[in-house]
Length: 404
Image (tube, rainbow, N blue to C red; front, side):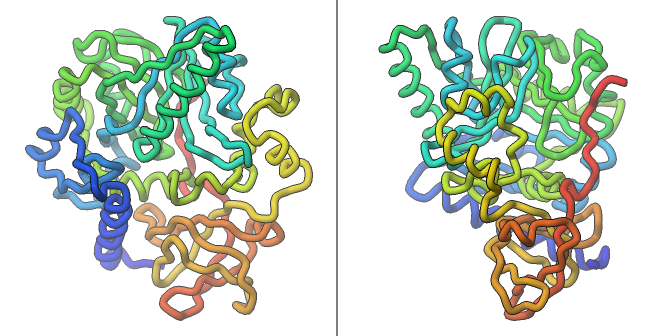
């Protein structure tokens, strides 16, 4: 286990890893700025390139303190770099279902679901949340790193659908997007919204006035495992909303950067596109079979259905699993061996010291015969073999809100 004294020093490596990841996306392109860029600078955010955007990796408090504050209180994330789209037209549901594995038709108004875009080989092109709205359109949020290809793909597919006589349109929503996450979220937000947050369960959404700002879409979801919301707000009012939230007298709201966002999502067992899932990984391999709706399996009419459904029936050759380990933290691309250390069985995709557990958490892919919880394995870290064990995810219990 890592001592409390060592943890902050080790977490500086998380910052370095985030910066390195970000630079891959930003070569040969000018960086875009979210509507909160000046707000981040004013509040001491350390800015780095990420998916073509200038984003805060951390604030003065550091990654570990920021992480623990979200777990114990509430933090505010700027996720305005993510792609928000509106899908309209009477054929909007079959259109979106033609690209993803989720059952959109089965959603109630103002309900959403996590899903994935797939290709003809069953690989994941991106993960997304798609929500029905009572206003008569689908609201889709997907990753910044895949934004250009996602939008082009949706526009191209929409054009093909229109040639076949379908009615569908795809429009980009140029709003800010703020994620308020943590057990004190409702305490902070309730004083500023015009509805009872107890009426908004996990993965539901509604239009609302938030701290006097009309036309905000509030979705109860998040990337931390904690109770939280994402608020889509007009760009010219995003800073006003951030100031209102961080100025709350109900609980101390801390601005949180990419570094703690990464460690929080890892503790929650959530995937990062490009690291844990990609176009060569199927939902079954990624342990995301639950995202494939029952009706969709029966109809088998999504991209890569034959390959994905065969894997569900016969089991894939490899699976994404979680690991707990001690000693030096293991990172992405670390080789995984069986308990004897003689047989290579897989590779890590993400890993970090856990501020909550004071140990190391990671995830990666192993041969399916080694995917059972409790299986002992070894990691090769700096030419040394370290003991690890396959462990159930999430590593830290989730606190998503469901009415009692």
